[in-house]
Amino acid sequence: MSFPIVRHRRLRQSAGIRGMVRETVLDVNDFVQPIFVAHGSGIKREINSMPGVYHFSLDTLEEEVKDIVDLGIPAVLLFGIPESKDSVGSSAYDENGIVQQATRKIKELYPDLLVVADTCLCEFTDHGHCGMVHTFERDGHVCGDVLNDESLELLVRTAVSQAQAGADIIAPSNMMDGFVHAIRTGLDEAGFSHIPIMSYSVKYASAFYGPFREAADSAPQFGDRKTYQMDPANVREALREAESDVLEGADMLMVKPAMAFLDIVRLLRDQFDLPIVAYNVSGEYSMVKAAARQGWISERAIVTEILLGMKRAGADIIITYFAKDAARWLREGK
Ligand code: PBG
Image 1 (tube, rainbow, N blue to C red):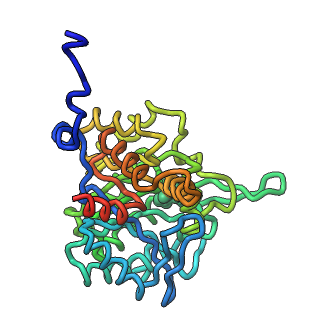
Image 2 (tube, helix red, strand yellow):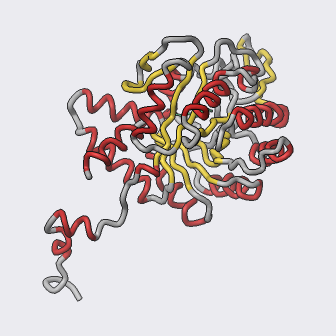
Image 3 (tube, helix red, strand yellow):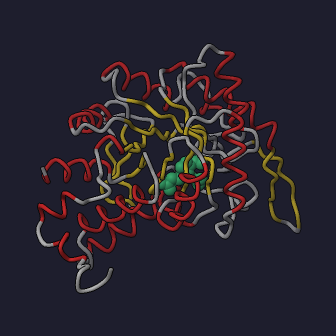
């Protein structure tokens, strides 16, 4: 059958009908709000390249978390800006590290709010790489190899200390080989076999992390992350990465960034049964904010469309700096 019997516009003629046949809906339970916690006190400092996103100190964090809870957002993802950095990222696995302190504080205030801990070293190392580095000189330049197996040990310590502080979910983003296996084993041995791992399984070496690296002061001091994060050109490699993580015991699989990688979100959705997480990263946020500030696009409509796209591609969970805005819009829309 075809036109004129078939008319697609019949199901588009009113808001009521469109609502009835809508295939994808956003829900506040889909969202995770990232938060940057900085050492110090009285800090609420806007990140230059991410308008509307702030560094909070432990004391100012309370108000922000209250907002998030009041909006009904179920989870936060914590990033730390420590007081000092060193070559092995000691403050990542210090029981009084900034993320550990923030976790304890949030869980004390709001036991039901899920704290997801990003398990990586790059915010805590002076060289800005996600693992331990062997440095050497070549033609007068400092170079370095990121050491895989040696880094795993430090990442396990980080994950265990985050769980000890009360983190509900461990989200390792470091892209070392075997990190899920190592962290799973470490958590289990420390009595945290009930803590799920949200693995940054498919994490591309992306320019979309630019604003985050300003926010977390974590740009690599030499080289780049291409020896451990993935080449944006690759699809089959994403399957290999995800499959390894599934075999190693990951509970959720993440794709990051999201907007330019929705084919990967769909692929993982179709290939695996685990919950799929899309990370709407800093550069994706900043681009929308910049254009909206110029008056070139309508922020609310654009963000809604972007988040819907991620969900339509198969994401069950969306980590986004727009979580609070989106939650507010969903509430207003009702
Ligand atoms: C840590 C980490 C990064 C992001 C999340 N975890 C930075 C990176 O890999 O350089 C980026 C998040 C964003 O851009 O919003 N490894």
